[in-house]
Length: 442
Ligand code: ADP
Image (cartoon, rainbow, N blue to C red; front, side):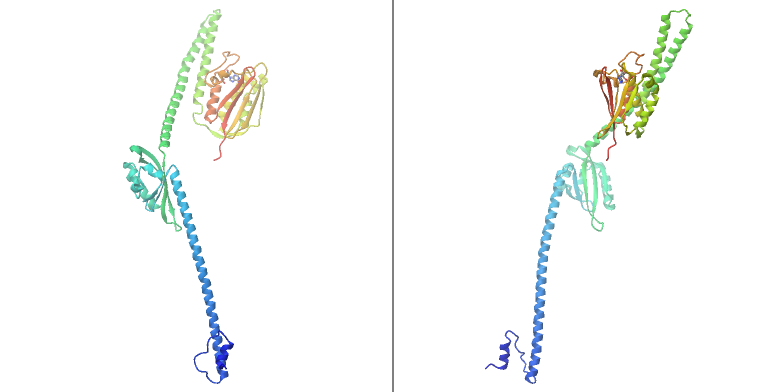
């Protein structure tokens, strides 16, 4: 027979053994005590088990986090590597030098173009080594500037001379910007070196040309004004003498002599007009264009009202498209329309003039056209008629004029950045076209 203890054991397999102290009191008291102990023990075991499971779960969690963190780190490293690769590729492929320096201005990275420009290796350029490429007499000034910017953190842009290949001096545009961390502290400087030698040469030669042109222009203007003033007084005296001679001639004098004296006076008057035309042409746009938003409709209305008499006299029909607002010098644009319309009426054929003014817009310009049904012009004269004093007709009576109108139109249109040209068929008519640039959106 198994003992009572053994029986209990047998009933509760797997349960912990009884405590090793002797039972106290009767068997009922012992049993109660023992069961309490067992329950506590079971509870403790269950708690420990629970704690162990929790710890295990946390461990697994931590392991997972660790694995995730490693993956993230690998991803970050890959991304960083890619950015670096891209940056290097950029540095190698763009045609200007890129550099990175520490917050104090010591060079840490220079792109191949930078090294080529400064004729240095990376090791030579590192730190402040690259400043040896600067033109020696300007180097200390440059370094002073650089110090100022690294100390104040102000962005930097300057033009400077460096020694290029074979000691040839090159002009370089240098730009630097500070890179700041989240607290606003400068962590590095990033900048570019751009070789602007060719641009500088062009700028210098352009400035030289502009100076030359302005001088020639001023001389021409002075010449025109001197010519006009100095020639006018002898003309006045020639005309006065012819008049005096006419008056001194006896009443029955030779009509041929009177005609000759009339011719002298007419020629003098014509010469006076030519001189005036020359002066007006030379002074055209002298004070610069007074560009404004100008309604071509209003310009045309004014021109048509000044031509009312000749329009009525010749029976001219003048029509036009809706006309735009353009950016132009209103007075000068008026002169262009005036000259073109006067010509369209003056160089009419047998029938009354029929004139149409049209306007259309292209991507970059307004295109105006003045079409007539006049005598037309042979193609070989297309260039000639835009030159000053060039006329195609000697018949002063039928086609009076000075040969200044179209030259004036050309000068005005070109001053505005446009062009003027024509199409024409002798005996059928002409179309004079001119363009004016439209302001471009930036
Ligand atoms: P002008 O009319 O005073 O002679 P322009 O410079 O205006 O001077 O014109 C130059 C020449 O071009 C004119 O002499 C004329 O022969 C020719 N011309 C100009 N416009 C026309 C036209 N619409 N039709 C035919 N010929 C023209």
